[in-house]
Each structure stands twice: as C-alpha cells, then as structure tokens.
Length: 100
Image 1 (cartoon, helix red, strand yellow):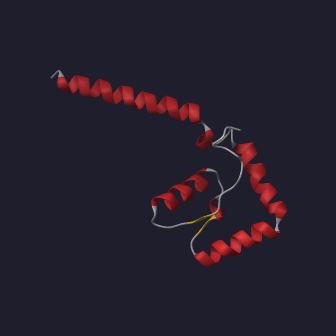
Image 2 (cartoon, rainbow, N blue to C red):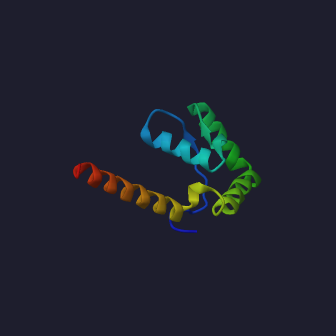
Image 3 (tube, rainbow, N blue to C red):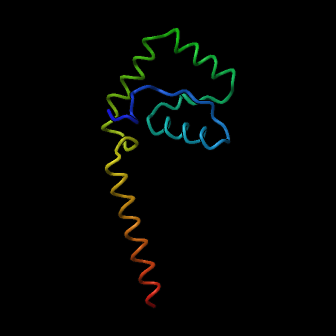
C-alpha cells in the first residue's frame, strides 16, 4: 500500500463542508457508506461501537486490503491516464477553436 492508502478506515460526519462531502464520497466509493453518519450522536455511537468491536474493525480493514486493487477509487494509474487524456482533448479542442 502507498502512503496515501494506509488501510485505516475513516469515520465521518456527513455534512455540507467540502471535507465531509469528500470523505462521504470516498467511503461510498470504497463500499463503506455506513462509516458516513448523519449526526454527532451517530458518530459517537459508531466510534464507540468500532472501538468495542475489534472484529468489525478487522472486517473493514480486510475489506480495504482486498478491494484496493479492484475498486476504481484506488486505481490511480487509470485516474491519471483518464485525466491526461482529458487535458489532451481540451488542448486539442481549444487549438481547433482558435484556428477557426
């Protein structure tokens, strides 16, 4: 695993803040939407539950380890390739438009 993928699950309080939306999106893409909760009370309940249930924490960590090569979320090479292709396409389209 790379430095960005430590295999440690996150727990987030879903909200309107950018970081909360990103964390919720990451959890959804990792097929772990139950780790994005909708209230402070649920956040505390979930954190305590995970702390008291090491088997559940291990299940989540195992899921992350097993899925890191299968889920598009973790495929940085494909993401980079797609992003580069999009930039090339934008460049060529702007060059074509400028030459009209």
